[in-house]
Length: 243
Image (cartoon, rainbow, N blue to C red; front, side, top):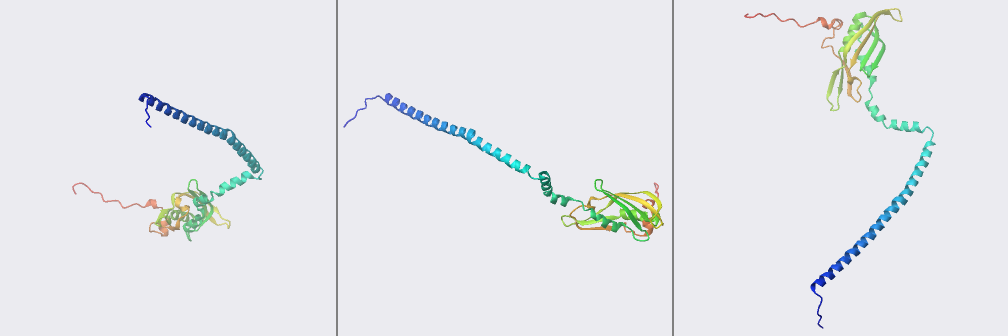
């Protein structure tokens, strides 16, 4: 059987174009229908499902808030819980002021320069220690006490296990010296000594902590009792030109 195509080429191209257009239109219609379905689903979810879930969550919050409000001393409980979480950090950073007893044991001189402490104040804000006391050996004992404080050092090992040492006291001053009588009726010299202490004295977590006393190699009573300011290096010989 023989078929003869009597349609011209241009007619065939037109038919193909119409078929492609029909397919594109059909595809657009399908995409549009799917898009409308998706948008409708999202609208239902947002304005219905989400609204219902939000109302349920609000009701749950209100219910639980009412339950919490009914707990006795709730604010105190929450405050305590918050403070409990900070105990470790506070404990690790607190100053070890109990070392002041080690300091007193080291700096109070032996007889005959007896010193008795009547008051001791530690001001951690200004890093100051103020000691009020009395001495039976009058001014000599107070001078020995002051120079012993000036020679006190802290020895310790740092985080790298290296031995370190620092002088404890700076700006040492003596004031309010006056004579009086103690409880036994004996004559004593009352005094106040204050100084700025090194931060290492009460620093936490120091290894091998100890306090030592140094008077630059001289610990005699005559040295401790005489003011250092009267001693100077020997003057050099005067030289003249041409000699």
